[in-house]
Amino acid sequence: MASTSSSKEGSILAKLGLQPVTKCSLVKFYAPAVGVASYTALSVNVMNPSLVIRIFPKRDITNFLLATALFGTSSYIYTRDHLKKAPTTARVAYSAAGALLLSFGSVLLWAVLRSIVPPNPTICTLAGVGSGLALVKIGTSYLDFVDQEVLRK
Image (cartoon, rainbow, N blue to C red; front, side, top):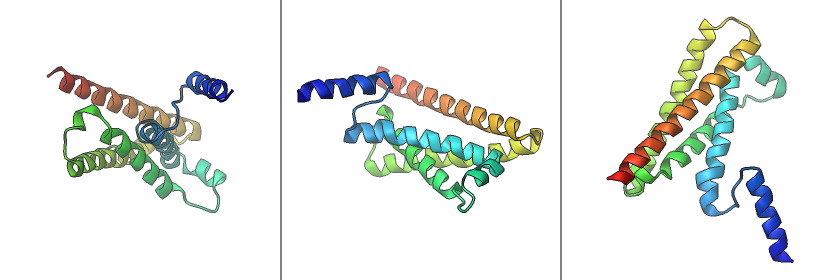
């Protein structure tokens, strides 16, 4: 019976596009997924701060969103195949630098976009989320390409 329930859980996870929860999946899948969610929320926070203030009126969640996005991005970069042979200190440095460049570069981009885009909250939010997701897609595609090139050699 226990095997039946675990296979049902596995199929539910698979249908939802999720992985079984293990130490490896926490670092390689779930932490980056939470990081992308925080990064997206950060884009909304920068592009349409009044929306976030309405949802969280008593707290400024910017630092929490930034820290979570940094952790998720660092975790994603740290576990990439092309860094597996690097010393641990170098992997930490490279992944932290990549996460910082993405997050702080994005905040700068969103600040510039906010000054260019018409002052419509919906347009600002869509511009922030759209540009953020585009940067995430470009970054993951780039890292996939680097991993493939390293594996070919």
